[in-house]
Length: 159
Image (cartoon, rainbow, N blue to C red; front, top):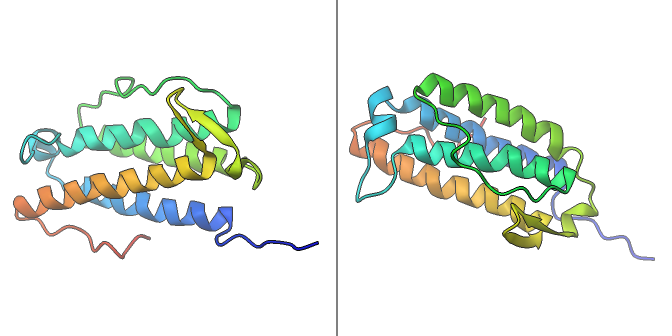
């Protein structure tokens, strides 16, 4: 019998994702309060709205995967008024991700799951989507910060 070794262990995948989350958190911190909620370029959403999207996906999605709950995505459940509220919720959802991610067995990563009742893909593809989506939105945040004359954090410093 041949044993296959995964390219990346689940612990490494979580560490990789949390590295991205650490960096995105620093991007949120870099914004002045007013601009976090109001500044945009070319009709894109302000970075606070992008951060709320990421908050509304990560923890709830991983919890949903573990509990096999296909509850719909709800970006309106969290409506912060301050940067402090966003950062607090970001940290809370980081703990939710850590708690539930470690409950996903290696076998479950290959199983199909209908995320939020809308996205039927293997669990590993959903998790990679969470990371890709975050990187995409963080890139928007970088463009905003640069347009505001603020140097964003180095993208390679994730921890």
